Image (cartoon, rainbow, N blue to C red; front, top):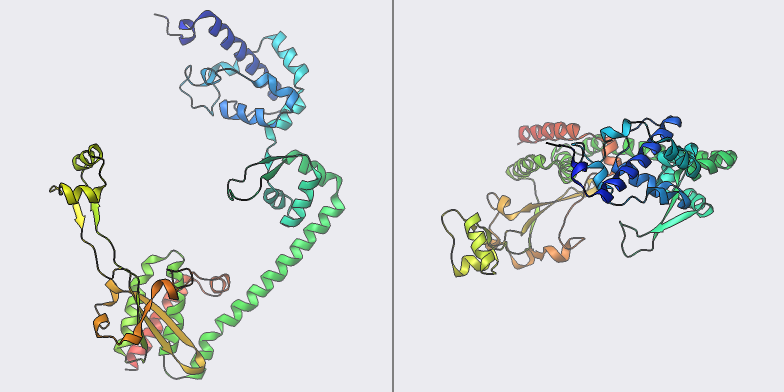
Length: 389
């Protein structure tokens, strides 16, 4: 039994595949001459096709190139098939050498299309200076994948950028020094701002004997740390707010309506298939047919997105505002029905973006305090508050 898949192909296709293989083996040999030892797979071949000059790319217009890389080897498309290590046909090698000199091939292999942002990071200059370089070089325009409503994005070859840098060393050095100077000034300003922030706890201690303002200061930072991705800190926030209330710290309470959470449904596989056959959504299926014992139905929750707002004011020291979801706060805060009408507000109208309150840690806060330090100092301030009761 012949296990060679190419032997089962029609003669014209088998001949075409053999010719294309000789072409790729010749490309591999020229790459080795240029000291390029990376494997050649279909992805690398596509990269060459993008980077070679237009008059050279006709050699790489291979028909059904996947037949060269996938069906005849277990390697993935980005790996080099075993037959690539065989010596190429001398006539094909000479023909390819004339069309694509080894140095051109090596440059295309290592070259790539880059944006002005990549030019800036590669040369160590500002984005504005990088755009000035891009305007001087041959470029291609492609749709912007990040901002679809904006104009096309300009790409230049990295080899052209490197050549421009070699031809303009004095100008490049000037731009690099300007960027380094601006970065140094920004870093110094950040350090000064962080040092000023680190002095705030001592100023609070000097202004009052009560530990409550210090608790609120560290709690505000903890809340921002939680919004920076440390969601496990919300439990400590809840503990701190409970301690403040038990200690009798004065506060103003408001209630912001955010709306109900609708009913949620998780159909089992069988009911989901039935709903698809009936062209029904999961909610429609539950209303018309009903759930089985394997389905999960979570009823609507009234006021699920409502928030309690607690405001603590300490005169010249400052004011602090915290928000607690109703499902969390209703265990230790008054029921909304007991609050006066002036205490109510709208979450959509009072938040900056129509929904969210608070913000993550700023660059200054991150430079001044680590999350571990914030947690440690908050716990210490809470112990002081409990002792002062």
